[in-house]
Structures are given as structure tokens and as C-alpha cells.
Amino acid sequence: MTISGMTGFGRAEGALGAWSWAVEARSVNGRNLEVRFRGPPGFEGLERAAREGAQSRFVRGQVTLGVQAKRAEAAGAVRLNLEQLERYLAAGAPYVASGQAAPASLDGLLALRGVIETTDAVDDPDAQAALEAAMAASIGLALDGLAAGRAEEGRSLAAVLDGLVARVGELTGKASALAEGQPLLIKARFEKRLTELAGEAASEERILQEAAAMAVKADVQEELDRLRGHVDAARGLLGSDGGVGRKLDFLTQEFMREANTLCSKSASGALTAVGLDLKATIEQFREQVQNVE
Image (tube, rainbow, N blue to C red; front, side):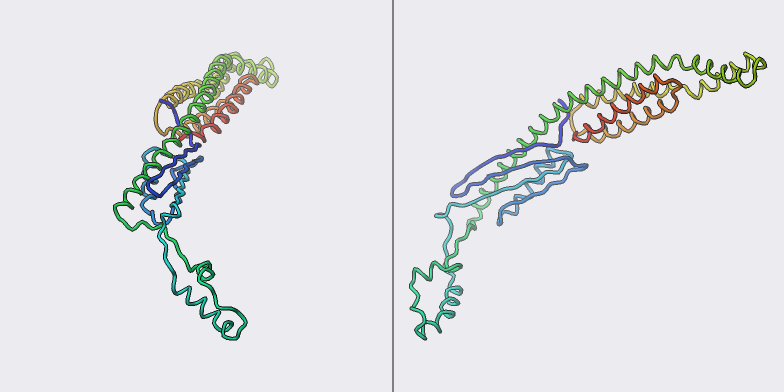
């Protein structure tokens, strides 16, 4: 298995009897799982199916799911709105009585807005349940398509993140090699400075004592060990299944903490340069991790 991204799209269509529908599901990055649903009136039960379906498949991301449904016109129930018809007749009666208008014809009255009404309501409870079940199945298919899209993004992300983790490992090894020369470099600098200040009065013993104390403060072995451990942890997470985005985000903070300390303890331009490369690589890693579920 591999990590999953948070961006994707899925679509499914279906039909039953006089009804046909289309379902679209899409998602973008999000710190938590947020599901937004929009469906046809009269099918309120579909929102529950959408939410439960998303929760069973995803851990993070903003998921938007919409259902558009229509019923064949010939299948819709037709009703004559007598109240609306009476309003039209009452409004026109004075004009007919005064001779300003001719009496309205039946086809003219029926063509007026609101006189003829059609409804998409499903009167049979069993038919309604079957229709909702079929739409819910299409919701599941659309969410499956969305999950496949997010998995595809995850495979692309994994390749990028693997490369960045490998780069962090390489730079850590380079920093380790440079760090071995820090004690001698610190001693030489301190000896030079002390000689400039104290002249020949500066004893070798004093130089060694002070340089050793400074070398302890500048020791970066713990930071390097933790960086190696974080590299192993990152590789383990990238090879695991499920939502690991939050763990990777936390690990990125730990990476940066060690890189910052490495730079602050550096006694050479070369080690500082490697530390800055580490920070730049870790920042790239952090940006990509924001897309991981």
C-alpha cells in the first residue's frame, strides 16, 4: 500500500424507472475531514449516505458531493391549480365586462404560469426507498472514483517525498563527515585568538581546556543521530497505509528543529552550507506533506 493524497474527482451516473441522475464527488486539502452535500429535494436520506460513505473511505480533506436527479416529464404527476386559475379569471373579469378584452380561451388559461403544475414526488414508499438505495449506490461509486484519484495522487507524492527524504539522508551524512573536523577547527581558532591576546603566556594546557569546553558546546552528534532517526521514521510512514499526513507534518517540524540547531552550532562555512541545504530540502518536504491525507 501507499500514502493517499487529498485531491481527486469521481463521477457516477444511474437510472431507475423514470428517474435518472448523476453524482459528482471532489475533494481538496483539509486539516480534518469535512463533507459538503447537495442533493435533490425529497431525498434527504442521501446526505447520510454521502457522509457515511466519505467517512468510511477518507480521514482528511474537504469533500464536496452533489447529486443531480430528474424525472422524465411524461412520468411526472400533473395537477390543475384551481386557486391560481381563479385569481387569473378574477383579475381579467373587469376588462372583459367593460369590453376591453375578449373572454379567455381554455388553452390560453392553461398556458398561464402556475395553472398547470407537475411534481417529481414519489408517492409509493417502496418505490421511494428503492430509488434512494439506487442513488446511494451511485454515491458509493463516485466516492470510489474519488478514492482512486486520491490514491493516484498519493503514488506521485510518494515518489517526490521519497526523493526528498533520500536527499535529507545524504546531507546528514555529509554534515556528519564535516562535523568530525569541528574540534580541531575550534582549537585552532581559539589558539590563534588567545595567542593574539596573551602572547606566549598562553599555555597549551589552557588552550586545550578552553577548546574542549567549546567543542562540547558545538558538538552536533545528537542532532545528526536524531536526523538519521527521523529519516528512518519518514521512510516507514511513506511505506505504510492509511492517513499519515499529520504524523509526517509533525516529523517535518522535528526535522527542521534539528537542522536549525545544526546551523547554530556550526563552526565552519562548509557545515553551515550543508545545514542550509538541509533546511531548504526540509521546507520542500513540508510543502509536499500538506497534500498527504
